[in-house]
Image (tube, rainbow, N blue to C red; front, side, top):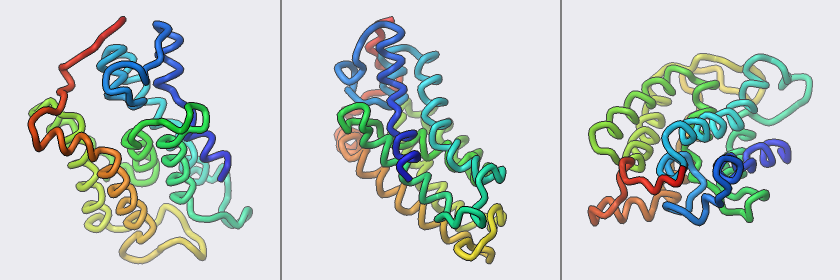
Length: 212
């Protein structure tokens, strides 16, 4: 669990900001260490790289179980999604960045991609449609989070994992519970964005403070 937290704590937006142009991204744009702020400050190329790396650090943990690199039965471990949730907490409160991190969207996407790819693809399509049509990344993040939660109930359990603590019935209650908690976390982390959306003062993805 400590390894999951430390992986989630790696502040890729901060690292890339300092390596590329020598800035602390927490002092620019929205002062958030997520991919959206990286796009605004560093440009779309580096923003995409930050998003991909944030996905990777959380998805990697799930992949270790998904492809049997780590066996649940052999190590008597808790469900992989628990480790994924801990990685998200590491991203939100990174020990390597004074506990001031991102909002958890990219990490969640990485976990869903490995655990349930179909839900990821549908959620990604919803995200892209909303962002392209409204230019609000926060709105796309919120809607796609809700969509993934609903899809986890609609789409049958793929039985990716097996074991005494794993769900093998019609519903994957671990995934449903995970996405329910993560959706609440994403809403809380976007609470200021929601207020700005309601007051029509939210920044669009096209509003950039590009320093590069």
